Length: 116
Image 1 (cartoon, rainbow, N blue to C red):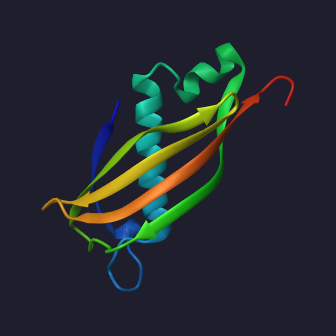
Image 2: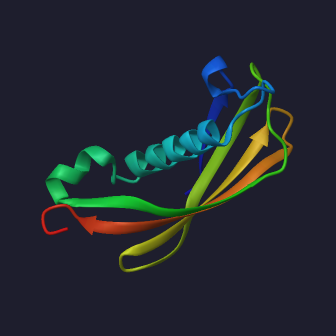
């Protein structure tokens, strides 16, 4: 399943050059991953019931172009490869005209919240 979410670069998301910062971009990627988890039935609110949590253990981010404040962009994400307790998630970021702005991969680890 591919999940898409649209964002607008707000004033809190910009750097000195009026462009989207890495931090704001990673927050958008994380939020889109959370939406995917909700739709798949694995949201952060389910953690207390199952005592399992997915924690990001690493990012690989390639930014090709940064949108300016006020511009919209779309984040797409989907599950990548996984093996028991380690999973990869892929992302692609598009401008409102469909140009690829960024690509990313995150690595996740499943943890038992009761036993650590």
